[in-house]
Image (cartoon, rainbow, N blue to C red; front, top):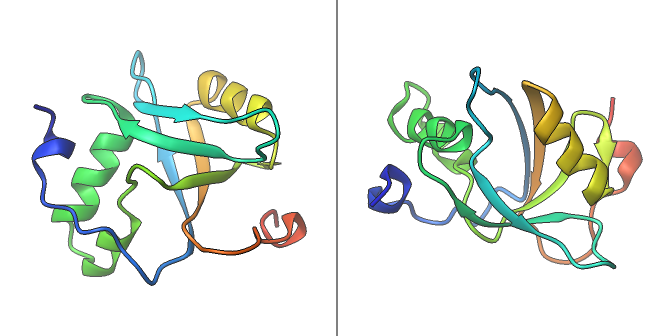
Length: 122
């Protein structure tokens, strides 16, 4: 059982949109199982793999000094809508995740329409 499976993580309900920057260590992958359909503009998080960068992020959020970061734990069902400056393009977002070590991920948990792309990239 991975750490992410053993942590009691309540699914945050009120945080709909958030971003964070994560650095993948050498020879470490992001550690996410994602999916997308042909018509999707997002990457859907299906699961968190052990020993990946996201599992480390989740552990840091759950045990860190900032209690508000617990809302930023990545969980199955989250939607990745932006990676670095790539917005609503799943194939290019996946490529960014594979090629870059420093990643700024924007996660959407909201219901209803997705945020406008212009509001996501600054």
